[in-house]
Length: 266
Image 1: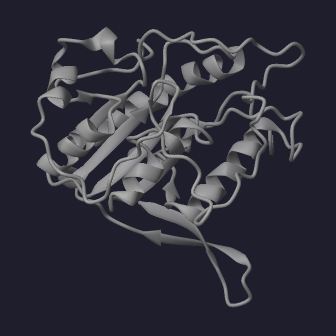
Image 2 (image 1 turned 30 degrees about the vertical axis):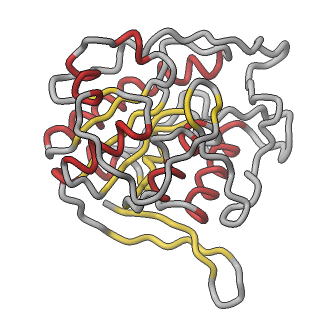
């Protein structure tokens, strides 16, 4: 697959680099972040619904090549108590982590906050929580009860929102490569205890499936670009400071996924 990252050239300017890599599927995990059944923001919920089909195809390909799929619907794992996927994660033998796990809490789980020494501020203003609906904004509430029912949880998959359980699964299977997909990149896909910041700090080889994510960004806030350009800015932020990215089409073929509302270049 073609990995893309941002690096500085001799003048200090950022430039895009691409390289081809080949990962052993048996040493790879795909973590599905917070693909909930509902969301307080109606437009965010609609975009999650659009992601379901392409994400299932992506996960099917990953399983076929031996990768472990970890479903991580934060704060609703109780819905899955007693299921094979939940038990697989819960019963994985404990393994010490090479560095301490994050201990801060946010939105029902541990949280890895922005690392000022490494990344600086995000390129979009999400201080209003990022509802992108036109007109009256949605009211923030905990709307989710489970993972989106359309996302297939199949035999051999695991399910957890816990950083230690995630590490236990990865360590026990000798997994070195971790792919993150799901929502939302400027929040949970970076900050959750199983997500990009934590996995990088734990020494894993991490990559973002950039066409299978979204952001919470209101285009009325700085930098005043459309929602999808705002998402692209956060992808570049991740590529600069945390990990490379790739399109899901590099795995499954065809064209990268594109949201119906993304009219750029059409």
